[in-house]
Image 1 (cartoon, helix red, strand yellow):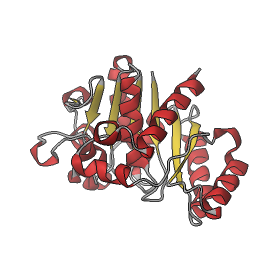
Image 2: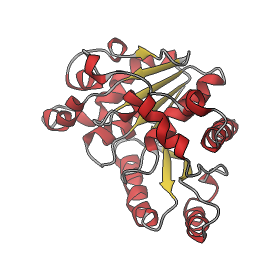
Image 3: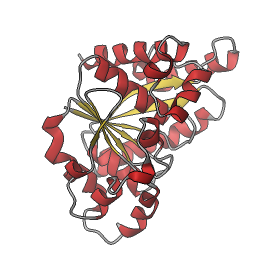
Image 4: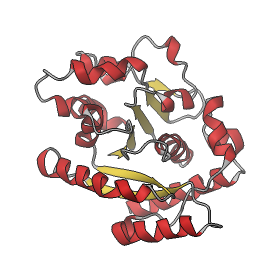
Length: 254
């Protein structure tokens, strides 16, 4: 069993899209997967067809009380083998509520301990910030999957991102590794996309996945219907890319 955070402190780089679709395709390959949504925006939750307005309990309650994570996990009605620990807007207040708590960076790690044997993979969709929620995810994880958008400003945040991971590794989680880097919103017709990939490969070397995720309207539309891309339009370029990425991800596990 492996716990993987999907993290980049920049917003809009494809974290949630990657989380939803990588989890979905892994389930299609026969793996049992849990997706933990610790972003207060709850985009993974709604993107996997869960109505946040109808939730009585969420990951917020797990982090701020004695509640077990088992009590909030929901099985997906869309894909067998896929389970979700959903998020709601209440989570935005959790960082303030947890400030006085002992061992506050390791709450999620302690909660996950009780379910580690229940899943093949646990993915954590992080918020685009470096607060206590993200720290909890990084402390609970074996590795970090980093989506990077193929644009000029993407490179500016890479150093800070790596520093954050190294800081957590030194002080809170010695096991933490970079799982891989996914180039998102790639457009092979532009020099910019190709240049950004080249620069990122200089930095992360063989950690960069060969499969990049293209700019794709169908990928952008799917979450508004509460569907992963394989159920929304399994033949589009975005779906093909995530299917290839999943196979590459599994090859790298071996």
